[in-house]
Amino acid sequence: MDRRTPQRKGPLSGIRVLEVAGIGPGPFCGMLLADLGADVVVVDRPQAGEDAIDLGAGAISRRGKRSLALDLKAEAGRSTMLRLVEHCDALIEGMRPGVMERLGLGPDTCLRHNPSLVYGRMTGWGQDGPLAQAAGHDINYIALSGSLWYAGQPGEPPMAPPSLVGDIGGGAMYLVAGLLAGLLQVRAGGPGQVVDAAIVDGSAHMTSLLLGLQAGGHMQRARGRSMLDGPHWYNAYRCADGEFITVGALEPKFYRELRERLGLADDPAYATQHDADQWPALRERLAALFATRDRATWCELLEGTDACFAPVLSPDEAAAHPHLRARGVYTEADGVLQASPAPRFSGTPAGIPGPIPRRGEHSAAVLADWLIRR
Image 1 (tube, rainbow, N blue to C red):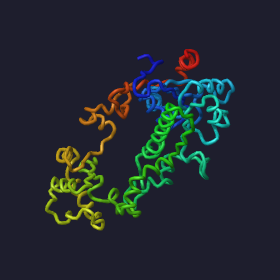
Image 2: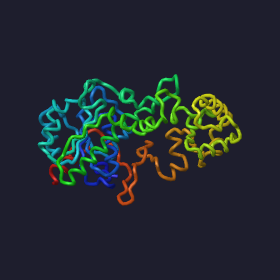
Image 3: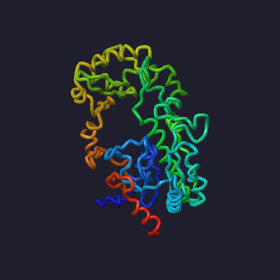
Image 4: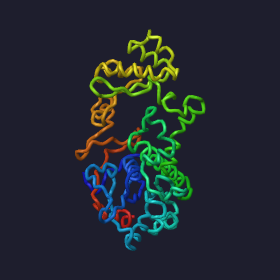
């Protein structure tokens, strides 16, 4: 494959995106757009900053992009950046509020150069508010937004999967949605605009289902007494070999299936599914039961049934699982395990993920493509 020209397949083919190099959700947003066919150019510093972490071939969020090295603190770099802005559809930046303005590359300036630009801003706390200038990371944002509250057992510190709820779910995915909505508005004849995507906003918005359950009396503030964080029938359990499995038999018909397959159909203790006072004792009994056999044995008994079951797999194990392998959910490129582009499209399928660019690798090609070959 020609490293200078990543494959341009997918529903976003023809869309040009500038991404100011950063960490976390901004690059992931750019990766998803590149996966779907957009021409994403990441604007790198000429040299790595002192806090930069060099992931090399592990920098998966750079895949499929092209790298242009510019010194945005220099007049020449800023001038080139603004010329590129005139020829792109969207911009992604994840700086602390005010930094882009101080560089002379804030949204007002960029929109003067390109009134149709969709200017995407990715932060943890948002562009305004008392905490806007404070440092933070994924765990802090989801703690404050309320989305971390139910992630754990009673009496234990909450713990969510690292980066998934905040950086990716509440951050990158909301920025993607905002950019796409802005691009649709432009396609309909509207002006460009600024998208303010904050992880506290997005992760709070993600609690909407839980807030609806709370309003309906199905979620309690006390952890361990709600239908998604405490029942014996919706939990993870350790097996005899130290591996883990999950059950999520929420609906009554699925709960009956689980009881029958575990030999508990005639046990009166399990007859009342929603008695929260009994959940701790029943959870302990199920824990003891699942600890008697290894994970493979429980998979043989429960996987693929309506008992709502799945083993807890590492990414490497997941890649080898028959279901995920059949769907091609994971792939390997440049010797690195990667998740394949998602979602899937029937008419404009995405190509295979493009390579991970080196810093400044495509500077000449990007300038030629965007500024000369017009």
